[in-house]
Image (cartoon, rainbow, N blue to C red; front, side, top):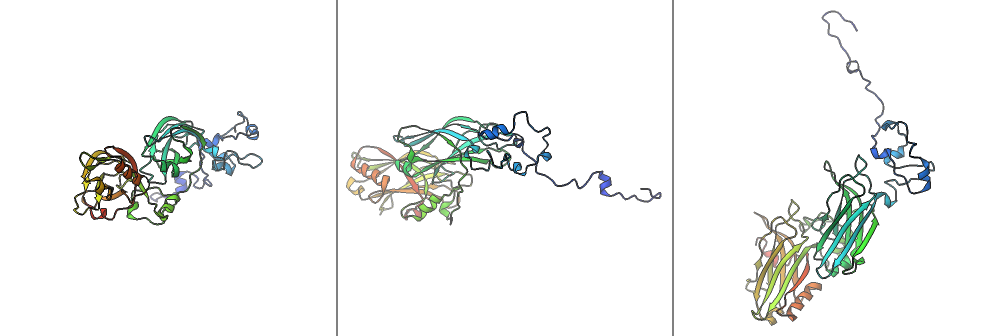
Length: 402
């Protein structure tokens, strides 16, 4: 294009950039794992292509089958083999672990051994797997245990032991252990690989049980129909939890507390020991709580029965090891009820109620048995684990700032 001297030349953007602005439709970029499809165990998949029959040119835009873009291998007969979206659970991998319930110490020992053939999650065809444990139903964030992360492997070996404290025979009967395998991603959210759910009733006391199970897809977790203030800090909801809230006498679990009771015939009074708590519900935005414990002996006409422990900062498994003494005759103590509540300390506002338990003649289950054994076995320290529930005792609500 020529113009007169002094005239400004006009050049369109196509000529200026010297490119074709319409190269055609943009196709999805394939992952490197798609160039090496996983083959099924059958003879058809093994003989469909030899190791030396790879395509001559492996460019992302030249690979044709649309089904392959979804990570599936499609043979000539149209059947899907080892697809990540198939119903074959072995495509997710297997997990090997041991479980041991120690009835004497009220602990559940979970030894995570190894995994094999995990599903590739990263662009390099590998994964950075770790294992998470949850006891269901319950406060999932509080009772979560986690292994270390193994880098760049589909066959990780952990050999780590994770321990739950405060496990009772009732937990073994009703609870389920959820074991999840996830892929750690530093640049985005961690990805779920697969899970296993083991009913604890399959375990026998003091007998180690070995498992080697295929991972399954995640079971959807429904949201609660309604969320109240008492549900803050709970991040995982299950159908079992919804049913428990609707059922008579069943309340939401908020953690465990280890109490020691002993009636001293020499001092003529009850010695209450606050030993520790485990797997408390998280009440603060940082995923922790600042718990302390309060005790009352009801009915409390003179309002002098309140005792309070010190505050433990930023923990869901505090250890207190504090003792309180109530001077009282044994016959009078038999008519009383010991109320134990756990609170989250907050500065400048009302403290949050975490959970509580009542021990006395009107209690049920382990709480009633612990109280009865204390009265019938004086001068003997009896330690028992108790479940904290979301039920707030009526009298405790009058002391939110204490």
